[in-house]
Image 1: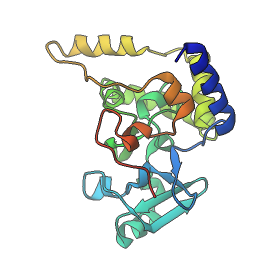
Image 2 (image 1 turned 90 degrees about the vertical axis):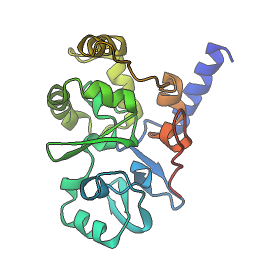
Image 3 (image 1 turned 90 degrees about the horizontal axis):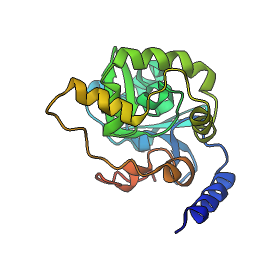
Image 4 (image 1 turned 45 degrees about the vertical axis):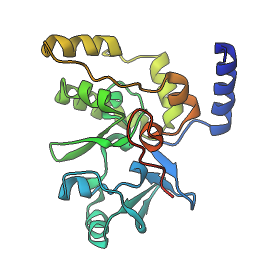
Length: 219
């Protein structure tokens, strides 16, 4: 496939899909916008691991729905949703530091300062862990202005007009390797810009098993 044809397909897909959802959601069989590919946000705190929820235990908030593994987890969430919801709409916390709303792998996660952070993949998590407080400070400052924007439109805008503190992937990797001599940067294929920005929904690599075990989409 030529680059011109790929670009045409990507543009068509973008026009059909619109600007993307403001939260890192995918639709289930009912058409509900499900977060975390159906994983239970409370389980990260109570069990220390990602755990698939059930549509039997669901909570719907504006533009997003969560599944829970038990009625007790649902009750805990309903009592304090802000305590358990992932930061930055469930998008990659590393990208959020640069105003990018891409990536959402519920198996790439971290609790830091009592907050749940989700990453797009192992690379995003590795990059974020170079300077968690730096990343959080920038993302917290940028997020209020971009929270309501669709992920596709916002990410395109962020790439076109980069924030002053923007770092390329190569720069981040070089910084990581300088701090970790003798260690190897994670080998992972992020799937390509066309797929991530135009053809696939948030979390597609984890759902479809692109370079990792397939979690499947919520049904």
